Length: 387
Image 1: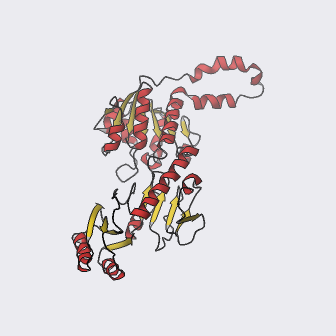
Image 2: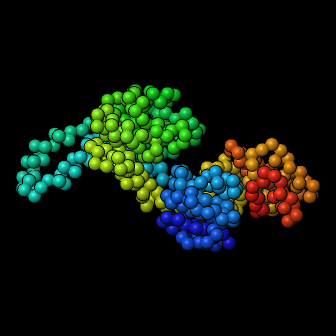
Image 3: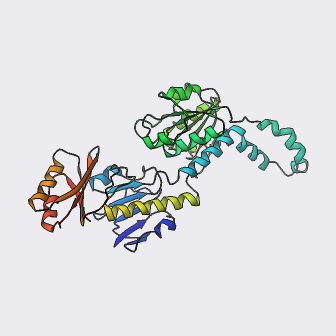
């Protein structure tokens, strides 16, 4: 029986797909698995029997990845499950930024009681104040062409925009999904120089923190509209605030409210609603349930952030999975110990990512406890599982 600790509100649609080998609760002690959305785990003590954490969503900044890897904990996410929800909000915000809808609606809501008697005349008189522009025919730059950015690119193209995309690490899967009408650029400066709208869909790391700052803003068109539905740390808030005050940026819409931008004109702070749809939460929980069951039953890994994808059909009675340091001679040591103990390997696979590696061994005879202990005691072995 595997115990799952559910943090935050996890949609039950996926949880109900779990077999009777699993129990789940929001107060489970010493869990084998954790399902989490936004709650930070950085201060949590990770118990020794914890084998996996699944982030229901794409970003994993709330999970101590290095600490998990050191303990042999496989960290998963569900990167495409909420993509459509975020994409729809980006498209809505794109139109909102262009048509001045936020300020216009606020103006109507703040009409006082005396003015309400002449509302129709007042509206006709004042509506020109909120005149906007159409997005059709305008240039939009998309920084980051992953699961969300590629969807935004395709829909913006369908809406008649000229779409420019930048992503130095674009995956083959994403590249195949993007319309041929999207113009791929190899320099981010082309996005800044050409585009009337810029939307951010890049991960937050050492190379992208404060990607949008005074220097990059200076290269943008005057009156550019900037959207951030990826990570708050991608932008230098004070530099964006100054650009708004100078009208270098005519509108900034973000899903990550910041105190510095509260009540700043033409800054629209959305309360982190990107993935907040019933469908998105269901999709995330379903994907999480599928991934964890394949991992537990077969040792396969799909959508992990600390181990590359690895999947091998299980045709043998016994399967050994090994999470180990990515150092020379590890596979040789494991296979030698198996051979010395008369264990025949039928199939095997191995993958690595930076300092860590993961291997699957299928054998046609049993692996006894003594052999498992010998493997487990090899320097560099972090965690083994016999399936």
